[in-house]
Length: 316
Ligand code: ADP
Image (tube, rainbow, N blue to C red; front, side, top):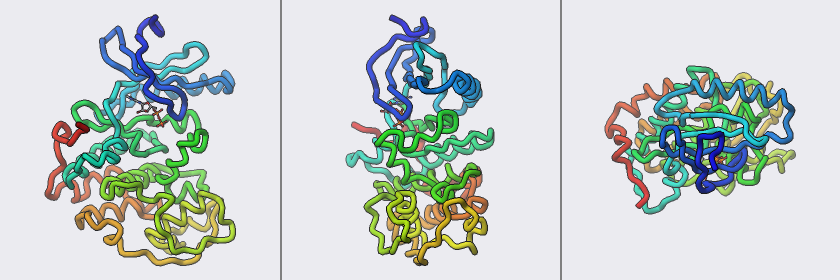
């Protein structure tokens, strides 16, 4: 039985933020695809209409480093999004202790990630939910960003499902301070966290990072806790580095803590890698490096050059 007269359903691949994802064959092209079924149940007709119109825009977003949205259609009260099928994702690669990632391999993954980001930011589309399991890897090692723009169309996926709490590790400080107006910098911050995770092979600003730190009285909010982790790594953000800081909706003054040397957090990183990291982790989003500027950083032109995608290590 074909879906929309075109797709032959195969096995379920997993349950995601917005609903179930299954594998299918596109009988029109013979291509293997992944179909994301998005529950629209509780939304009003008008919202669906807006979603469909925005989805149309995403279909135009074509780049070698973005997962292609092949088709989108409503079916039995669900919105179906058809994407190209990908073998694995960056989270699986990072967690696989049998895979050795050389400095050149890490550079290659970061270059592909930033190319995808720079492309979308140029078209004024933000990702807003960058994390290693949204960076999918194809059979030839090519990395592509998945779920671009979906967070904006369907609402921030945070906390809707329990596994989503992990996404907090990648949230930029301006989001944690409740900024309502924010820009492409949130994706660059998250990409910095992914860079850090590739270097250290574990989530960077994660719950069990050691902090010798006194939290303010509002302690208990997990966004506050996440800010504590960020400040323990880079030092407390101050209005002198970030003039707009004190005007953010959820701003609270933190006890001052000094940053440890960045080198101590990334013992294996090159000087160029550290310099790029520090620019991606700039507190003031207006001063933070952009994805395009990051691609032009000398880290990418200095030796070792990025590994060719088809030569990247893969799970046995
Ligand atoms: P999450 O919301 O947790 O990021 P997703 O909705 O993106 O999860 O995906 C759910 C599951 O489907 C995951 O196991 C993911 O690996 C798989 N998946 C998603 N997109 C694709 C794709 N294009 N190709 C292959 N597998 C995919």
